[in-house]
Image (cartoon, rainbow, N blue to C red; front, side):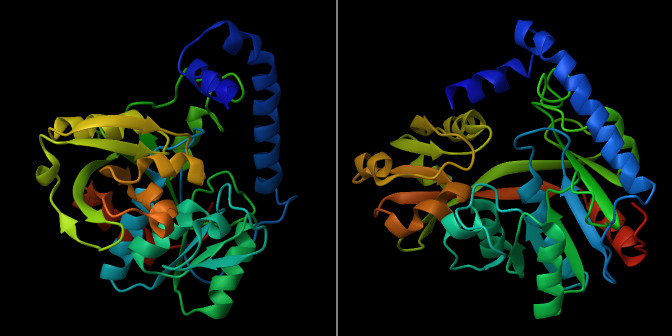
Length: 330
């Protein structure tokens, strides 16, 4: 785990390790190009369906804001009359079979992000590392008329009608190198072939759509009581975050005037009782992604801090145009 964190740190600068790994990155880049070419030439099979498929992903390893954008996209599609379903890999889940995620699902079984999407978006969610199989489950068992894939830009076996890439304004592309010398799964030139680019934070260019994620109210994990974050201003609390960028969560809480002690954990961390027991009897503020994993063992003063997703109206308009006129071109 420590080496993984060190490697991720190296990905955001040019250093001895990234330079040493550059030959391996060149081999990786060649493999990426060859695989994409085989799909493009029809030598590897692409699965296609008679409903639009919207893939939301990013070019880099780690969080960029994909899951909030998936939730915003699903809500937008519902508002314009579609009945969407979501497919996800369910990263770091303990089960291996295809499963449906619901509001009551165990995050250890379905994955923390599918559990969160099922709870916040209220649509059918199928989980499988084989995404086409997950799509088949939704189409066979539900009446969904559009599929949204949480991640999957690089899952080329899954045909798609619309591709949306998310860029985190803070991390962007790191040192700009391909794995393992840098964080890129594909070259930056890949952005030229997607339908929409969404920038999470910062100022979007004329070719991008802007998205901002801000903290909303707090909700008690046991009583479901909702309180504004201003109620915690001037008081002390422990902040728990097992996400890609815990420091950003901690910073936003401090900006609200809350005196927090930050407890950062790796993204998708599965909490043990030995980690959570010392937090009983104190005020704990945590992300929604952590709350789905802690709810079943929660204490009376543990709170989920919600997230407001602000995306420009032009994104919704363009999404409607692309989905309503969808063909499987990618």
